[in-house]
Amino acid sequence: MIKGSCDFYAIDAYTTYYAAAPPNGIQACDPNFPNCALTTSLTPDGFLIGPNPDAGATWLYSTPFGARPFLSFITKDYFPTVPSIIVSEFGFAEPAEGSFDTLEQILWDLRRADYIPSFLDNILSARVLDGVNVTGAYAWAIYDNFEWNSGSRNEVWFAVCQPDNP
Image (cartoon, rainbow, N blue to C red; front, side, top):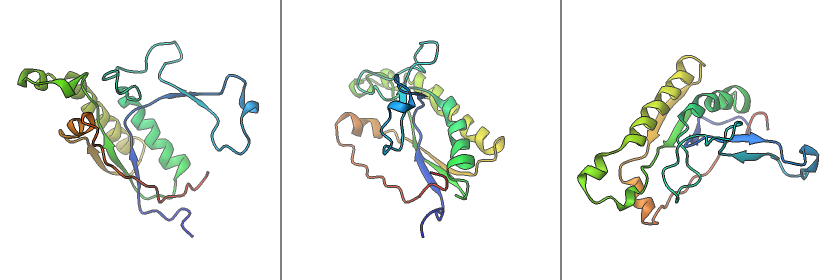
């Protein structure tokens, strides 16, 4: 009854990775496991996919260029009947910003100043050029990284959508 019945699809779209088949090929996958791929933060030529904020966030890379194709994939291939997509969270950190204690350090925000407009440009391109009905986008608030750095990240997210084409 709920398959394909969502009002919108929300996604936390922070970063991008490359996917590849496992070293022993798809045949080595467990047939009951829904996904069988490796992910990597390296480009096919061996370079990092983008800058990393610091050693504590090894999962996060500045890759705003991945937002547009991902939003298009969700709309056209994975959830074609969902009427809108909301980017419910995106953001980036400065290296070691949890230890900053001067205004000069806090205001030197180059990586985030590059990431946020680039990410928004990719969301806009997905909407205008690819026809993705993005109806909202929410960036990290300034206090998110202070909370994250102190270990008090208390978020609960759940999915209520079933893919149209699993």
